[in-house]
View 1: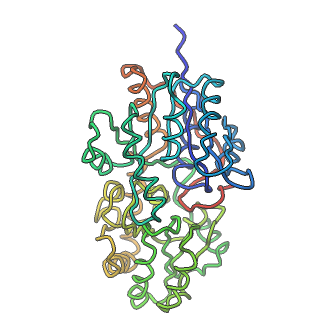
View 2: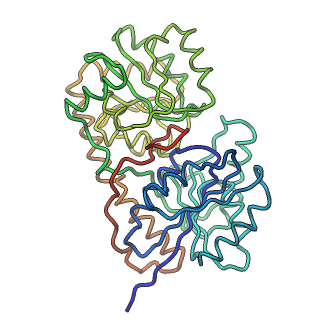
Length: 407
């Protein structure tokens, strides 16, 4: 008997560049090639000019992608246009990423009988009020979805506290392509440092994250005061774009650490940046399962992270690095100094982090879990997920930098 194919529309409101969710959408679409699920990326766009980073990257990779253009943010015309796409493409199921996509899909869906799956990455009270309101909308809109995919166990608990039924919330963490992201050789490390203008022999810390308040860059800048006392040549490499850039630059100058901090902005080769580093810092005060964190672990970097949501679920304290209290620069500094003081032990922790990513957070492994959630949403929980396609070549879009796509 011929296997039934299912068309899934992944809907994302694309008013920015490639960030964590966009990277996850692209990796999942690649893994679904050759499975029972045909994947269509739908980009809700209200920007000028009409250039959509996620759409462009999807087309470059040979993935099915469409743009639903609107005249302004929250233009009601998006509902009619989206409904037409769902009907024309004979979509069997929708998977949304973000509040705007959730609301547009709910309004476009009546009469179509399409089951809905939504990804939940948490709400961020440190963002501007309009963003807070949009994020809080998810706590209402996702109640009408058949399955909700929480980015970590802690976020599932959060949803349950908000009244969601635990049985329809699946824990689906972020994931990385472990065939594309891997530890560097000595020569690759040397080449990466040269490309970034970093001298050999100096300790390099890396944070790969958009420059937003919840990512905790400010605490790492303050931690650098103490780190530099113990290791005066240390460089903190902050890779990513965001609206806090000028504030962070000013704060680095005021603290007297600017000479040891590099804000790269958008950097086109995240793997090169990771290869230049000795350890990864993740000083977030609130976060889901950070894609940047998993990329650092996949590169074999030891981790200094805060005990927030996905970080504490991904990093085994004392085995892969250290977990510290959020918002505590002294604790960040002390953990960093401990790792820099004993680099052989730090490298062993990095190797353990790599093994953990391979076992729990590889794209193939998590994609299989997502397909099981899709089957549950379709009422086909007993159906085998099907064969996964091999990863496509090329690094593609990744990380959590914000800004433009990876080339």
